[in-house]
Length: 295
Ligand SMILES: Cc1cc2nc3c(=O)[nH]c(=O)nc-3n(C[C@H](O)[C@H](O)[C@H](O)COP(=O)(O)OP(=O)(O)OC[C@H]3O[C@@H](n4cnc5c(N)ncnc54)[C@H](O)[C@@H]3O)c2cc1C
Image 1 (tube, rainbow, N blue to C red):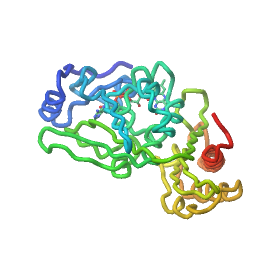
Image 2 (spheres, rainbow, N blue to C red; image 1 turned 135 degrees about the vertical axis):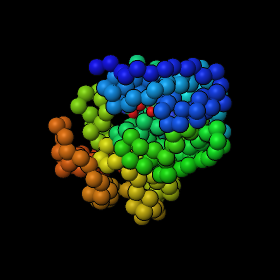
Image 3 (spheres, rainbow, N blue to C red; image 1 turned 60 degrees about the horizontal axis):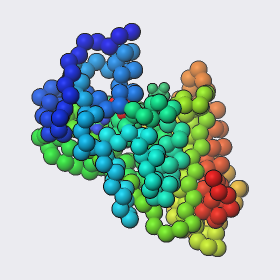
């Protein structure tokens, strides 16, 4: 199928893009990497009358590394973030997650912001954003700027709090301070590069004696949005993680998910996968924080 007819404008500034979005009042879409929007248009699942190209907006392409956060412009290509020299030291979970996002070719074009706004429930960056509880900055011509947390941002499958006349401008990823930090990202997909049937992510900081000082973890692909479990995570603080405890926590988390069934996997199988993947992610991140496994 071919896309429905549309008009195209290449924005020279964010102000121009926001002005055009406002003029079109919901009939326009920003195009970043086009890796999700173009297939959606080709299948006529999206039929914007205007495409506003934001690829030349250098103001959306900055990566600012600070001690407590990394601010990533919405227009930063996934591949540029993947190769940033501070990524592994500052955002180890994002470094792990990015390797699962599509293929080198799609990451060359796909942007960090485009992935988050597209909000596929299996998207790795969306899961990492929830686990690390990022702050997302939005801007519109009429309503100015506002900032949302990840849990305020993701509302459902392919559905976010971004208004029709708003653009995502940048994402602040918190940097965990100190050492003994481990991160793990696990997923199962039909083929390498495909969207995950289920995924699990975990970042842990431990004390020298093995007690958990800080932990965040979540599941992707098994509900309308990536899921995080702050109360379950809090219950692990000051505990040493054993395989039995990891399995128990993963079981509780997976049971609270509501995956769908499709031709690839039943809901029950996805829950089973989620439990297995989360058990593995918890133990891998924990052992890594204790210096027991390097990867
Ligand atoms: C073969 C293939 C495999 C893939 N596998 C995966 C995978 O395993 N995991 C994964 O997560 N993704 C995967 N993807 C999707 C890919 O990661 C896309 O890059 C991403 O989903 C969208 O990013 P984009 O920059 O291409 O956005 P676009 O396709 O340009 O836009 C996507 C949506 O976001 C909106 N948008 C973009 N930028 C902004 C902004 N700054 N402000 C407001 N709205 C904005 C657009 O209007 C559109 O609605 C795959 C894609 C392909 C083609």
